[in-house]
Image (cartoon, rainbow, N blue to C red; front, top):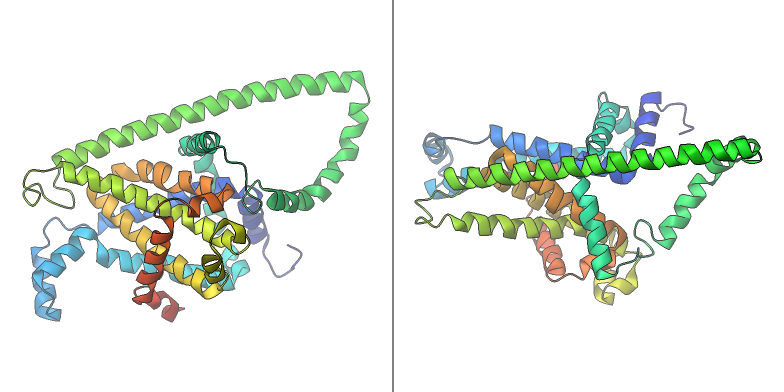
Length: 360
């Protein structure tokens, strides 16, 4: 922040993003998933026969392989992964100040915060709180809200708090100041309750509409797999949709869990803890996970059209991220979580994500 070479826009963008990181990440998730769905929509072919014939003549690619590639959006997945995610993430991790100085970065940060404030993903916060209450979870030491993270946050905000103490102290010594502050506190609490209720209503309404329209799309459109190919068993699409939502949820929660597990050795087996202390293993998992998430977004778009965006974001992305951010050990201990972790590592080992590193 004190570097004179860093632009004011970069400082403002960084302060806004880190000042309320959970809200920024939730709003960013809405933007990111929406963009991937739109790209998937753009790259959808109504008739792939010509494309597959061209691919066969040019690259000797079989029609069956081409049909699967086009149906699942694999070609778009690899392009988005290489140029839209892994490459900018690698560059941004090495040159963060330059990244925050890019034109439009500050606007994207504020747009993300605004989208979260609208209440679109407010149900995710409620669902995460419900899971913690039902399972009796308290914040783990290295999760957000845990003792270690709380101590770090308190140390960072201590100077800021001291700056406001003197200004508040003079008013607090008078009865009039106390009365005024209590009235304002009551008004603020009432206003917050009203705003919170409105945001929940918006989230419920958007999710309900999304479920209705997604169901309509899967019922009356030959999405991803045609009714003829399913022999009239359209329910297979719904089973596939639910299974893939669960799979994506595990992936999204694992992202935050893995980043914390190098400090939470007691939460996992010693062998897994030792493996995840290797930064290269963590990097490989994140790349493999990124490929899976983009591929799943493309498949979801093929199943639901653009109508499925709220379902995917609220249920399978922001909700598991919120749970795992406070309880990383709990999340990695869920049935199937570690299998998904090893699957992502195996997928990265195929080299499918290496093009982004070469482009860097």
